[in-house]
Image (tube, rainbow over all chains, first blue to last red; front, top):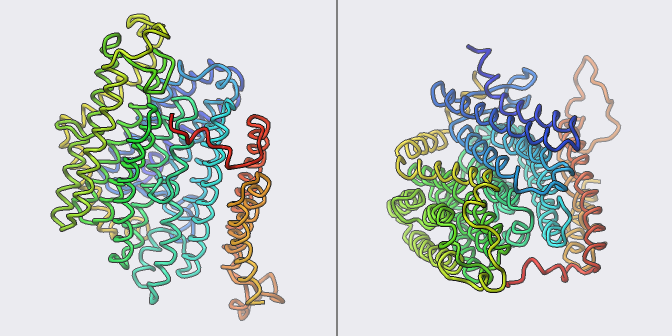
Length: 505
Length: 116
């Protein structure tokens, strides 16, 4: 039994690393690389699912790399939240790999799209599983450097411009993480998260610990696109091809949110009134300004990008309220959001194929010509806006309930208002892209009718249908995800289990 | 010695942020490089800066508290490698942007922010 546990924990990482190496070995042979990526995507999904079931059945899984005892070596830990995030990242990666087969141009594939994508997933998966703050920094860098390459791959003018902003801000955020880790190490003498949790609780000088919390809040805040730091996101995310945008929009900011949840439940619970009220204010501002940005935009991809910012606010709101129900709401919201947001971007790519544009003013008539695409969009869009019985409603409902229970009426009011404004900006897309006849029919005659679209771009539709089915699954059977979120929240709020699993195996 | 190092780190941080706020690509590159130095130098000093202590411990182990903590130094090496990689990426990226967009002014990189 003890032999099988570490294998399961390492298996997702092994799959991605091996697939990356195979892809490098078949450099320039695009079809081979695509086949490797599809197989790897499937195996990664299987590995993540088996890890998830293992954690659900047998509790937290821990492996000490190199067999160094806990506070000294690097630890990989999979608790419920981490394994759930790995599973959802595998779902997204699988859909994106499927989508990219027909979405990414041959020139981009030749420049190494698949290997870079696999490295990025490797970094994402590692960030979820690590139990060591410096190791987390290294995984973040693996993920970020790969995402830099993905964002500029193809070298179009817009991509390069967006990348300047993205790369510079990401570099600064990494610097903040490194500085924060240095301060924390100086104060406590350890880098292991479980050990840090113990050391911080006993630290004689909690004000200094709060100083390091500010560094991590800034560092992860830039990555998660929190309120004052989100300007890079709408500038850079809409620029690369849809497969890349979908993956980044779905996953990368959420890795930042995951790290914030991990740090502000496991480590920084020494001074809740200070740290978590700052988080609450930031959450409210993030929601509000994100959705205002979305309302001002008139481009399909940019509206969706600003929505990411506003939705990040909901996730941080749950973390800031810091009750079991609120954190469960956050976790539910993250998983719902990853599915829905990625799917919306994938659909915007399909709409682009039908009309050749992303600008709302030049789009139109999709409802008449592609009713199936319209249905896919409607499910995701209304789920994002929080219309019952779709998954966004459950997420918002849990968060609002938790907010009311802990008496945070202002943030609940803001979140409901933002939900309304989200619906407003979604209906802007709905009206001009799907319902209106649009100028496209006159100046730019439709390139495809519905059957041709299905025949030529079946991979794109398959990926989108796959994600839509997942969304519908958690919409109509939310019990499973809600009880999972509650258990995960329970585990986060009682870190003793995590600490025991790591330090006293 | 004890005062000089924090001062250097402070100057590096402030100079790098000042340079990054400028418009020129070149100043951005220098700012990014200095920022990398500042963070790695800070990480390095966390382990303590000592001199004249033997690199190997004797049996007596009397000198442990005179030695610097080696762990931050190991972390610093990792951080240097990573930040050099990112700095190189930034340099190549900005060169490519200069070729593609034909400007050296960061304020002109605003096509992705326009509402249209």
